[in-house]
Structures are given as C-alpha cells and as structure tokens.
Amino acid sequence: MVSKCANPECSESFLYFHQGKLFRLETEGREDRRRQLGDETGISKPLRRLEFYWLCGGCAETLTIAFEKGSGISVRPRPVRPQAARVSARANATAA
Ligand SMILES: [Zn+2]
Image (cartoon, rainbow, N blue to C red; front, side, top):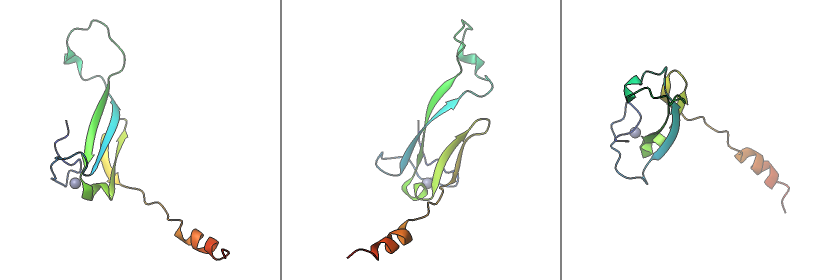
C-alpha cells in the first residue's frame, strides 16, 4: 500500500492516517498488460483497481492527485479557488 508521500520530490514517510491527505483512486488497467494473472478462463471485464495515494500534510496543502487514462496518476498543483471575501465585505455594508 502507501509507503510515502505521492509527491516524487518529497520523501515524507506515511506513518499516520490523520496526517496529510489520503486519495482513493480507481484506475483502469492499461492496455491489458497484466496477462500474467493466470489462466485465461474468461473473466474479461476491464481491470479496475482501487489504489491509494497519500500526500503528506505539507504537500496536501498545495498539491492534489489526479488520474488520467493513459498517463496514470500525476501529482499536480491544487487549483486555487477564488475567495468570496470581497463579495461578503460588500454585502456587510448594507447590514445594520
Ligand atoms: Zn510530501
């Protein structure tokens, strides 16, 4: 399972569940390369695996994990959400 932070540039070890952020991603088998699963007795549904990835606390603040068909999982910057602070400040102006 998970042993370290999913960020390749980070070597933080996975020790506690309550630290950082755990991602559960469902990945689809790529191009059927896993033929060595044994006999071909006909379970031919697509290979789906649940995989877990973990970002340490520091990385989870700025990074997230995404899965794309073909390229697999990747660590990428977390989208920054525009804050609604300015809107609420204006709304407060009408409050008594
Ligand atoms: Zn990390």
